[in-house]
Length: 85
View 1 (tube, rainbow, N blue to C red):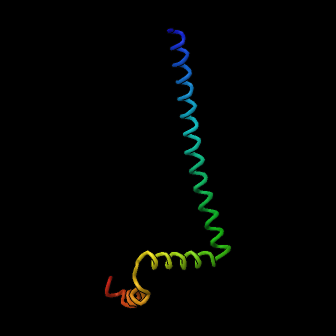
View 2 (cartoon, one colour):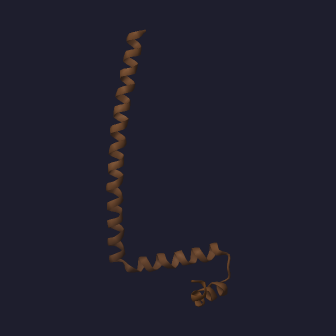
View 3 (cartoon, helix red, strand yellow):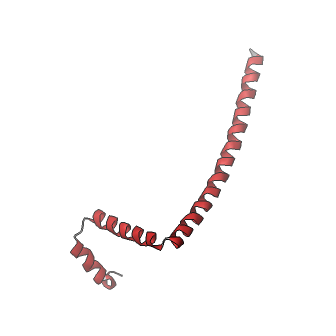
């Protein structure tokens, strides 16, 4: 029984070491991915400036829909923004 327990413990320790190594690799790769994704996004925005405009339009529309305010209310808020600041 002791031998079986030692073997099981060794097996679990080996698995723990492998898990730790893989977690470290995943963290490293995730950081690399984040840097590359940001660089890609920057280049795409530079290459296709209309994408930025389209995202801004979509963000404004989404905010309008979520606000549950009328378009007239939003225009009034924009025109009188100095009063709110």
